[in-house]
Length: 306
Image (spheres, rainbow, N blue to C red):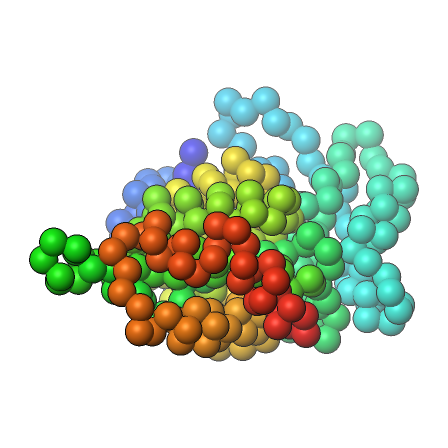
């Protein structure tokens, strides 16, 4: 089945039939189908960004799926107001209130992760940054640190490759995980995520990548939005998490991970700047990541205010 979310996004961005079919590998009929839904639903770019989970499944069933359910839509406007005006209210409490409300017999309620994703997307689309608060276990911010660490071939003395540092941080607790990878390709990106989840001992509802090219891409040049790569989306589906890329030019979206990257520079790259490493394992061991020296005792405490 075609990715109608990407098709609609490109349509709203003004892309032509040829551009869309070439970029996404879909047919002209599928583009026409998406355009019809845009017209029928009076979709605008702003409303598109507010669409809740399940919206595309409801409107673009391929006829083979057994999934016929539609969702009881929360009042995200009211929920945003409540988050802003009610002290100490949590998304989990809002979700429980939503579940307690009557539901039509032909609809079903959102699960917690879907509910949070829809609410977060509404808040992001409406730039309600003052009501976006971090909750325990809700989000994990991830990125590659820009600077790399040389790993030397012991026989020749030449640089064999430059290792990248993967950084993951839980913004609520400030707990941080860092590991070195041989490159920034997709297998390494996914492996680093799995290591981070195992270290943290939990799977968050939302993972926020800072638009690393491994994770997201622009469907067309100069596009104002980014799409999640298919392999990364498959990883998210497997673990039951939602991927919400940061918005370009919105520093509030990525403050936590940028702080974590800065600490990785000063506490790891700076500390070992004069060291020579001959393997990736040696680098990770030197950083103390295996016993959790930096992540559990040092870096986590420095991130308490993120």
